[in-house]
Image (cartoon, rainbow, N blue to C red; front, side):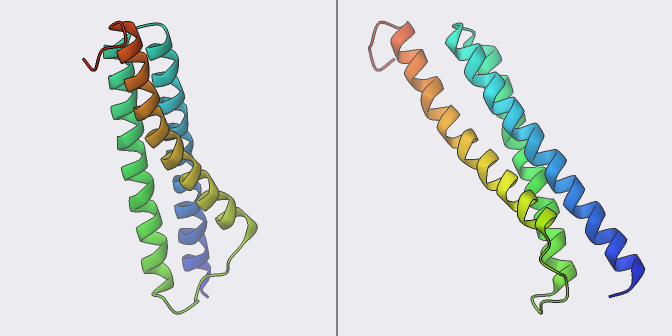
Length: 113
């Protein structure tokens, strides 16, 4: 693997980590806002989480294209760590959406509103 490919590989991993971290933070902020009854802010933060997950997925796709499905890129601890962050961010985002809906229903008096 050329030095140029290694540098691009490392940059893509770092971008994946940054975007996954941003998604996780935004989803948790959405939950905090919903807990306080600030549902507009919660939805804005959840939208930011979704956008960051989308960006992270694009980074992941770039990594996959660098590998070309042939095992060209090494599976390093930092790559596994980045993938773990993305998976957790996606899970937190999904759960945040459900929990925010529960907060909304509770605030509305338990109705399905």
